[in-house]
Amino acid sequence: MKIRLKHLGHYFPFLLEMYRYKRMPGAEALSWRNMYPCIGEKTATTSFDTHYFYQDIWAFRKIRDSGVQEHVDVGSKVDFIGFLTTITRVTFIDIRPLQAELENFTSLPGSILSMPYEDGSLHSLSCLHVAEHIGLGRFGDPLDPLGTVKACHELRRILAPGGNLYFGLPVGRPRVCFNAHRIHSPDQILSYFGDLELKEFSLVGDDGHFTRNTELDRGRTAKYGCGLFHFTK
Image 1 (cartoon, rainbow, N blue to C red):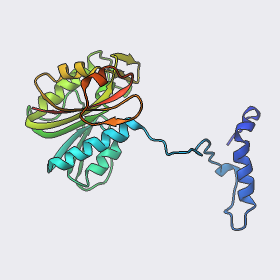
Image 2 (image 1 turned 135 degrees about the vertical axis):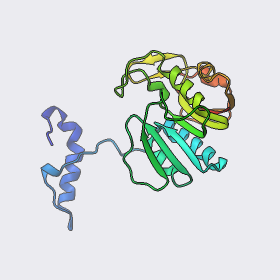
Image 3 (image 1 turned 45 degrees about the horizontal axis):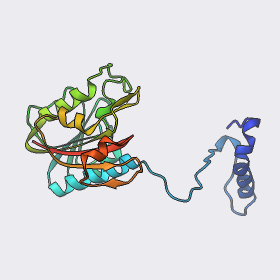
Image 4 (image 1 turned 120 degrees about the vertical axis):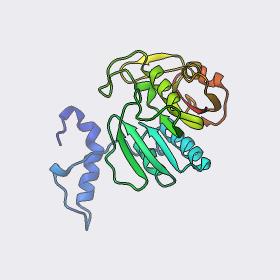
């Protein structure tokens, strides 16, 4: 670990605690090469990413309550996938396959722009905080201004009549934050999914609060909210 002199003041509390710990009876051995400074974690509350935290709970509860025996997810957070395998069989599709050993789990390489499924074949499908990245090159994919549109069309194609799609992404004033993600208005998303029926719109607002079954207007006026859409065909 290298500590520059100009940063010494920042690290001083850490160095003091290290010295105090080293002098305590029964303390484990300390050496510089094993230093692993963790600074700034003395907080009043536990921090968390409100988008991912609430969206994963939202989708997990809906999939559990639906009672489906099989579910397909496209590119969502792997923690969500792992928990989901405890209640149903899960197939995870991603351009970067998840090499994990789990019961009720299958991982297949694939693109959200060309899914390995027939038209109208999936009864339970999720895609959370994924479609906003498509076409920006962040994950090695080719640049495409219509990436999100094409991703939504593909999800709509493979959803079965009567099937459920749980979809989430940033909502607010439409714009691109290159090359991280896009932000879409709820109206754009509704148009991308065409004839699918919106069963529920929920929102993680700019203030980090989660509201279930709220008005689309709240998503339209957000700066960087997380819109959660439950569609059916």
